[in-house]
Length: 269
Ligand SMILES: C[S@@+](CC[C@H](N)C(=O)[O-])C[C@H]1O[C@@H](n2cnc3c(N)ncnc32)[C@H](O)[C@@H]1O
Image 1: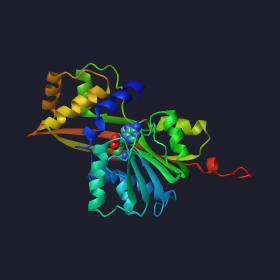
Image 2: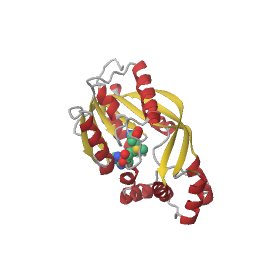
Image 3: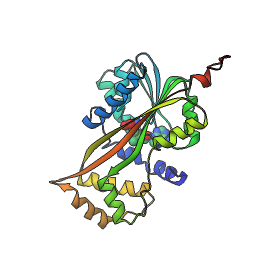
Image 4: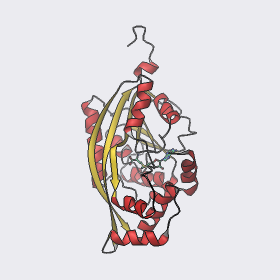
């Protein structure tokens, strides 16, 4: 993400607005993907129970909550008060106060108080520069997990909106692709494994939510929203009084170990 867009996003409170409709931990499609991720990590020998975990850009807790249920102790970091507010409610309702520690902060300037058994980030724009990745590597003495986009992400509503606004290419916003993340690991000789899987989901918005979503997403791309074009596109995706937004994507998981980085080993393990 460009520096300007980063500043804009923070100033606009985009994530606080997104928190209203962002999937909760029990959203069926999200739950399926998170289960997929945790099962794959489990098969690679990662045990979450009793581990300290830093979740960078935790959002509504889609990953933090399942991990807390497995007995991990999570520091749930997010820049958005709105997202953390949602997570706080769920933490109370599910009785997970002992396992989830909420922390509001911007990863760019946040200083972790400790190193964690696991540092993770899922679909988080907090990890969008080499400096941010480096900081993530330094935040764990053991294991890191990055979940990002794979080869493609097709959001039919946003793609149509972009086309109608004459946005020339598919300028991407949000978190970086897995490919970019592993390039940094390779430069630093950090061992990793990856796994890719296909996924799809449908967001259901009210008319007002769809207008807000369209406006925000265009502003994230630094494009002046055209209200009449937004209405035309919304009409195409309306079913009854709801707007259905379908996304198809490939997600990727990167599992890496920083043990070598943090352990003195004369034999050069
Ligand atoms: C797409 S959501 C992902 C939420 C969750 N990790 C998931 O996988 O569902 C991205 C989250 O990153 C947070 N975020 C964006 N920039 C951030 C930053 N610089 N520092 C901390 N959190 C940030 C947003 O507030 C938002 O909650």
